[in-house]
Image (cartoon, rainbow, N blue to C red; front, side):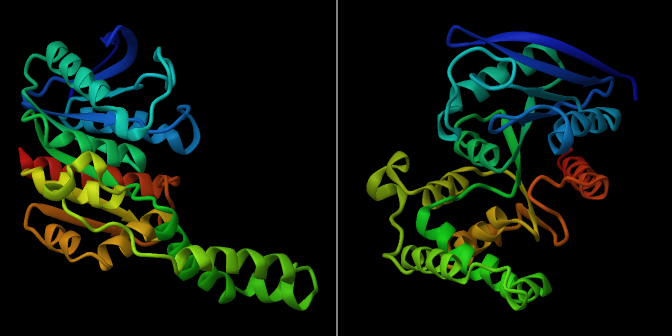
Length: 287
């Protein structure tokens, strides 16, 4: 495939955003918009977005990546992941305007960018799929439960923990104090489990809001989860305790991939390659 990389500036509510289109010479009408979440730079594990865009374009899938307002090279004040609808809409508008064959897009996001993608997707009929990697469903109680269940259990079962303990290099008092503080939060009251019809989606807790946004989105979903990541662990725990989430994720339109050895950002070449191949295969099924 012949691939061209084109930097561009486009506007979102008066602020200039910076993006790069990796355009393939394929005539496919489906493109991928990569939403970059959180303050990041483009080396190390976060080089993944550049490499993913280049890989997809080389396989015939035109791809655009861009910085939302207040991030990277774009103008404006930094915004939370749940305040990016205007940025994503502006990104899609610019993508389809500059790649005339692109009529439909897939939103691709890691962590809080996955949450941002899900919040937006159901509002725009041009969005025909979402790829969600280790979605951010943080709540204080949920994070505490995940920490107790996953972090502390792994710690107690590790050889390093017992080596430190037996060599008196372990601060027992501080660790026990920290554990019980987290345990108090974990044993607190259950999070809100209302549905959108009773309160409106904007007023729901994060895990429930994401569930309802997924319910309102009618197109395919690729969910990729790491096995060595507390963010993914918290998402799995939310799903395990919520029948609504379970029902949605069991629908035929949802493809789930578990990469048990991977960390949060898929930081090795092997894990990054698995993400690339799974993304491409899923998009080819859409096409």
